[in-house]
Structure formats: structure tokens, C-alpha cells
Image 1 (tube, rainbow, N blue to C red):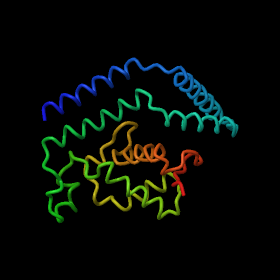
Image 2 (image 1 turned 30 degrees about the vertical axis):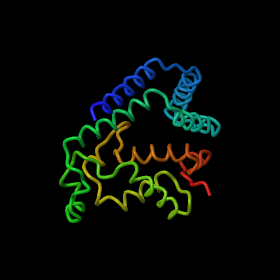
Image 3 (image 1 turned 120 degrees about the vertical axis):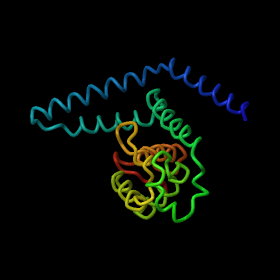
Image 4 (image 1 turned 180 degrees about the vertical axis):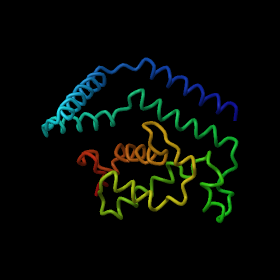
Amino acid sequence: MIEKAEQIVSQLNWLMDELQTYENHELAEKKTRFKAVSKSIETLQRGDLSVPAELTRMHDTLREELNELDYPEKVFSYLYDELHIALKRISKPSRDIVSGQQRMYLGRLDRDTPHFTRSELEPILIETLQNLGGSASKEAVEDEIERRLHNEFSGADLDTVGEGIPRWKKNIQWIRFDLVKRGIMKKDSPYGVWALNK
């Protein structure tokens, strides 16, 4: 087991080195353009001026393109969240041995361990989209998942991460990103709409 752990540490160190030296001029240019467009929109809004539809479309397109890229900050955020969860699980008993009655109240019993892993949330996301007709706004999907699972979330599922959103929502976003890459969800759906490929 130590040998496997050493391999993981070695891979992590390699990845960290790669991320530290990561340079992508296209990414830097997109970030610069996104900041400039965002600033223009804020300036117009502060002056109570209408924001041209083309500027809004450009802003949404750039944000979507940035979300599709594996830039260093995004990967570091993902690594931090996942390693934090893994370290907490080391000292916790497996939740698979928790009784059914305790499982229902797991959120109150164990605040440190997420109740739902990404592999458990993936079929829930797909099923939710199917129940919503194959596509829906991101907010509608998250609201439906929250309505369905709110009694089962642990304190760790509800902890805020990254941009100050609950861990379970961040995991749903990562799952959506992965499903798009695998062709299960549409890449070109309108901004803010999540859709399954037929």
C-alpha cells in the first residue's frame, strides 16, 4: 500500500509542477478579454445605461469557453477540494456500515464527511434532467436535486467551497463538465441551460 501511496504522491507532484509552468497564450488572451468585457458591462450598469445584447453574448461566450478549459486555478481548486475530502475520510468509518436509520440523519451525525460522492451524484443529475424533459436551466436542475436530497446532505455536502457555493453544487458542476466531455450532455446548449444529448 505504501508503494501505491508513493505513486500517487509522485503523480501529484508531477501534476503540480506541470500546473506551475503551464502557459497558454490563448487562455491568457481569453481571460484578458473576459475581464475587459466584464468591466465594460459593469461601467454601463453603474451609469444606468443599457448593455448591448452583443456585449452580453460575448461575455457569456467567453465565460463558457473559460469554463471548458482546464486552467491551473481550476485544477488546483478541484485538487484542494478532493484531497480535503479524502483526508477527512481517512479517520472516518465507512458510511456503508451505517444503519439505514442513521443514514437518514447522517447530516446531523457526521458533519465532516460528504454523504454524496461524485459517482453517486452523476446518475442523480442524469435522472433529474430526464425527469425535466432532457433539458432545463442550471438553477432548475440544482433546485430539483436539492429538493430531492436535502434531508440526506451531510454538513460537508453543505460546506461552501470554491466560489462560495455548497460542495454538492460544485460537484454537480464538475459532473456536468465531465458529462459534456463524454458526450452525454450537450456542449453547445444555450448559456445557463443544461441538456442531455438525445
